[in-house]
Length: 148
Image 1 (tube, one colour):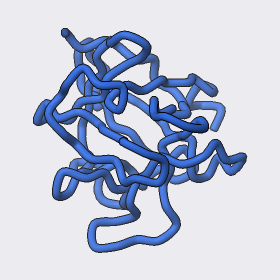
Image 2 (spheres, rainbow, N blue to C red; image 1 turned 120 degrees about the vertical axis):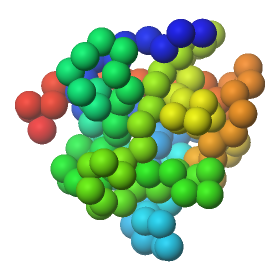
Image 3 (tube, rainbow, N blue to C red; image 1 turned 90 degrees about the vertical axis):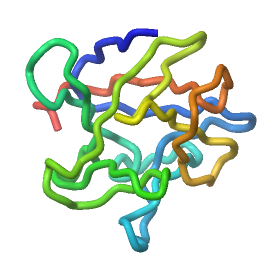
Image 4 (tube, rainbow, N blue to C red; image 1 turned 135 degrees about the horizontal axis):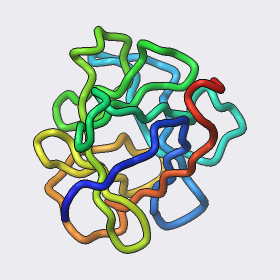
């Protein structure tokens, strides 16, 4: 499938897993590559669960970067095919595209690997894309970026 455009803004990213609702969440404790990014229960603390999605440059078809809404330099990075959030220079932020799939979107890395979450609390892994619900996500638009 071709990539789809995403409106720049602040989002909550919902995982499609069995059980209670889960959101992409930055954990509190950093390890070697930054703070692991997991899927966890819907939590009222936006500091951990609201993400800015914006294009890398203002041209149609540009890939996107994803960062914490409350921290302008803490963005998603990929290490060892897992997702982390870390405060690194913008050129080191990982880039992503989005594809429409049945029931939501698939989030793909520059290497074409898909976000995957098998259960609540699992660190998000990047795997070969397959038509599996663990690789399907819902982007919930919360507000425009300038209203952070």
